[in-house]
Length: 232
Ligand SMILES: [Zn+2]
Image (cartoon, rainbow, N blue to C red; front, top):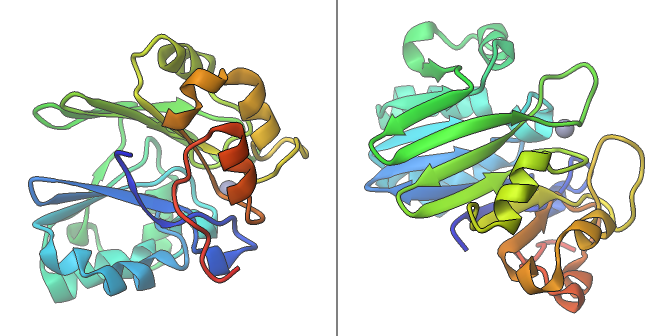
C-alpha cells in the first residue's frame, strides 16, 4: 500500500478517525485531507516534527475533510516553522482559511487542475459527484513509478480513472465506500466497487470513509484494508 492512513471513518464515525492519509517523499510530507480529528492524530505520530515540509491536498471543504486544516497551518507556521502548502483546484479552501484568520504568508496555495509539486511528483484533479453546493475533487497522484487515485467523498469513480486502473496505468485506488449498499447520491458503497472492480484486481483497491466496521466484508470480497477501524 502506497498511502498510510490516519483515519478511515465518515463524518459521523469520528471514533474511526476522519478519513485521511499520508506519504513522505525525501522529507516532504503529503497529506490527503485534514478533517476535525486529523491534527490531533498528526501530533501523536510525530510526523510534523520529522518532516522537512508539508503539502496538504484537500478534496473538499466538509469539516471531516478540512476541519483542522487552519490549526495545522498555524502550527506549522508558528511552532514547527516549516513550509506548508495547500492544493485545491479552486478558491473554496482559500476562502475558508481567510475566514479562519490564516494570513496569506502562512501558507502557499496551489490551485491548478494539474500540478507539478517537484520533478517526478505531480497531481491531476477530477471533479467528483458528492454534494451539489461544494466543488469536490478526487486526485490522481503520481510519484516516480507510483500512481494512485484518492477519491475524497465521491459516489462514483470518474470513468477515466476506472479505465486507467483497469488498464494498469493507476496502481492503487482509494475510494469512498461509506455504505455497504448504495444509499443516495453523496457517497460510494462496497456494492458499487464490487460491481466495477473484478476480483483479480481488488487487492489494490482500498475502500475508505466507513459508516461501520466493514473489515470482514472487505476481506471476504478480496479488497485491500486501509486500516482497522479503531474505537469500534
Ligand atoms: Zn463530504
